[in-house]
Length: 170
Image (cartoon, rainbow, N blue to C red; front, side):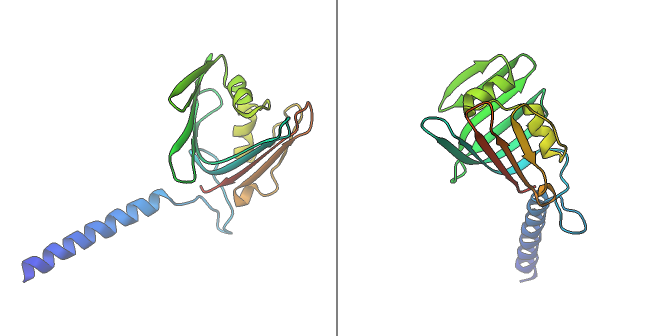
């Protein structure tokens, strides 16, 4: 009887320990007031992009972003958790993997423009994620809700107008 109880407790303890480790890996970085303080990746959350092209385009996905503007990776996920696209970049090369196809670009910014339909600087995106303003031609970032893990960036000119929204989980 004791052997069965001990084995059950060991399994329960192992399960509890595993659950704690998994939960610790999901902890968001918040300050004492509950505000968001993440300054370094990986960044995990949801994004939506609306481009006022003809016809208008909109896209939303869960994402995981790691690295920096020079070298990194962005994974986009469907609502069911499957990978929709993978963007990888390093100096002088960027790759978009989507639907089993790979497309190569000379830079991450060119890849982002082709993928989204609107020019966007990866350096600016990383700066905004760190809560740092970065002036990019045509883009205005609203960082007023950065401490809550929210980011809004709008582009009015040159056309097409675009709006990027990010909600960070951690």
